Length: 109
Image (tube, rainbow, N blue to C red; front, top):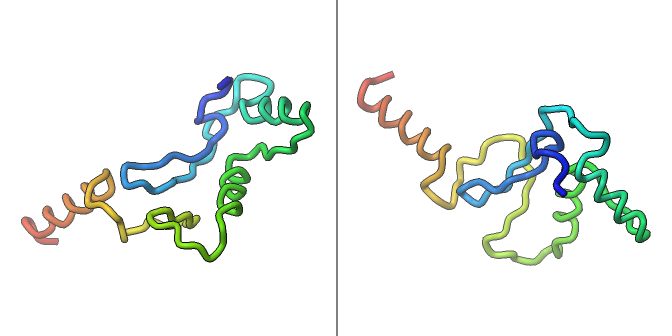
């Protein structure tokens, strides 16, 4: 393990602004069973049912968080659009936005 590359199975990563971002697979796996399928097979030998899709795993993690509890900085919220309400003023998206603003201010629209 791992038998598959992240680009073959998809999953999540946490960016520099501590935002969990989900991505899908972009390549077909070159092996018969992906890492997640192999892990599911091992767990099934112990009688444990496990999801195979990365999205299902993320949703299970979110479902296990206690409801109505303030998690402080932890905020798990699936989104389909960019979040401009960042906790930090660094990271690729903030730098790109700042560059665009400075460029427009210096040279106009």
